[in-house]
Length: 163
Image (cartoon, rainbow, N blue to C red; front, top):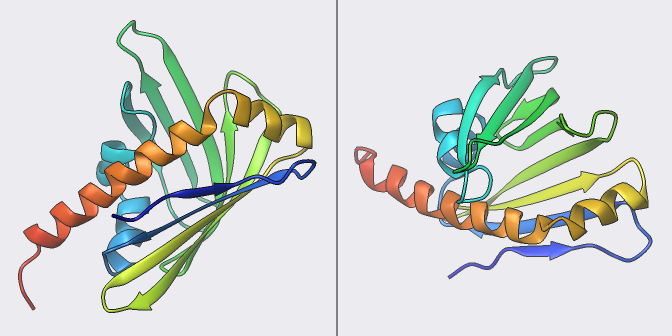
């Protein structure tokens, strides 16, 4: 079973998350940019995720709303700077904390043999912003979705017609 790794060096304002998936690059890209698929894996398992907008192209915007069992809502949004099967670059902002924007660069590396390594590099505006996100439970909130993404990719591979 693949492991999700999260690296956050003390005093730095970035976090790197990586994971290998047993799925081809184009399928991983689709799962990261198709609103219907993103809503199935993005965010903690304890919330319902609704993708309100996802226009994965340079200048396109995205907005995701999560609802917990108590009815509380958590909304996030951003702007795409790049969206190709090899790389997705966008901004990420939690709407309850406006002005704390991070830059996210996801690299989707084709490893051959139908495998893809995703490296997600998050750059925060400050070390304090990064540390605050880590203290809020970011590691758990990132590793759980990566597990669900892996499961979704397996389901999509099994449902795809043989070529």
